[in-house]
Image (cartoon, rainbow, N blue to C red; front, side):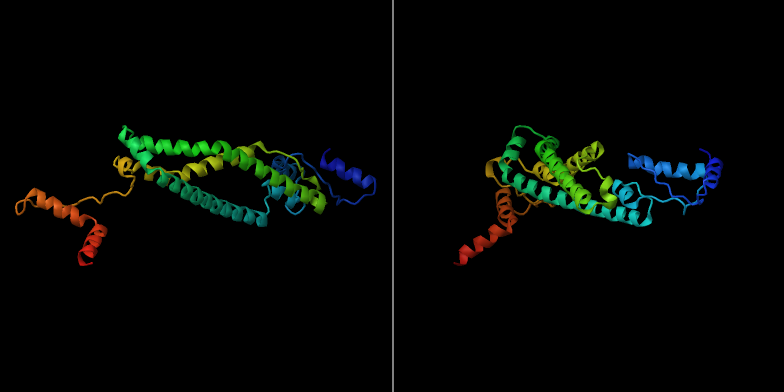
Length: 249
C-alpha cells in the first residue's frame, strides 16, 4: 500500500495519522538491512523508526551507540581471554616438553631436524584438539542454553522472542577455529624449546645448552691439553664453586 492511500484510508476512518506499527523478523540480520529500506520507501526520519535494542544487541546487529561500546568491551575481553588461554596451554606444554628431554634428544640422534621436531610438537598439540574442542563446544552450548532459558522464562518481556534451544552453525565453527588457533599459538614456544634440545640430551637427560664460546684460545703459550683443561674447568661457574668449597673444607 502506498503512503498516500494509507493516509486517505486513515482519514476516512477518523484515525489519527500517528500510528505505531511493529514489524517482526525471523532473522535479526535481515532486520538491520530492512530498516534502511523502510526509511527510504516511506520517507521516514531517523526519529520515526526505532529498533528493539535488546534483541538486536544480543544478535550483534544493533546500530545503537551504547551497544556499539559494549561490542568494543566484548572484543577487549575476547583478546584477554585468548591471551590467558595461550599462556596456560603454553605453560602446560612447556612442562610436558621438559619432562621428555631424552625423547627429543633421541629424535635428534636418529636424524630428525629442528623443523621436524617443531612440526611434531604442533601436531601433538592439534591432537589435543580432537577431544578439547568438542568438549568446549558442548559446554559452551549448554551454558548458552541455560542463560537463554533464564532470560526467556524468568525475566520475560522483551526476551520472550529469544529461542532457548537454538544452534548457530557460524558460532560453533567460529568457536572451533578460535580453539585451534589458540592451541597453535600456545605451541610455538614449546616447539622451539623442544627443537633446541641437543642430541647429547638423549644420553645425559639434561637439556641445558652449553654456553657458546665467542673467543678462541691462544695455544702459543701453553699446550693444547692444558688449555682445554683450564677452559673446561672454568666454563661452569657452579662446578668451580664446588671445587673451591671442597678444597677449603
